[in-house]
Amino acid sequence: MSEHAAAELDTRGLLCPLPVIRTQDQVKTMPSGTMLRVVATDPGTLQDIPAWCRVHGHEVKRAEEHADEYIFTILVR
Image 1 (cartoon, rainbow, N blue to C red):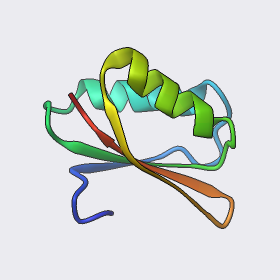
Image 2 (cartoon, rainbow, N blue to C red; image 1 turned 90 degrees about the vertical axis):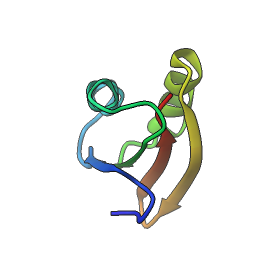
Image 3 (cartoon, rainbow, N blue to C red; image 1 turned 135 degrees about the vertical axis):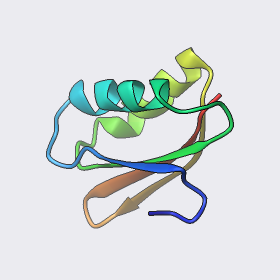
C-alpha cells in the first residue's frame, strides 16, 4: 500500500461498472482528507474513475499505468 494512502482497494479482474461501484462504496466509509489507492485492470477505469471523482468532488492525485494495471490515488473530500 502507498505510504500516503489510508486504504487500498483491489478491483483487479473486475469490469465496468464494478471498479467504480467498489470505489464509491469504499469512499463512503472514509473520512474527508484521507487517501484511497485503487488498483484496477479494466482500461475503462482510466476515464471512469476520474469522471466519477469529478462528479462527486473527490480528487485524483495520481493515475499510473504499470504492467496492465491502473493505479489511482484519490483524495477523499
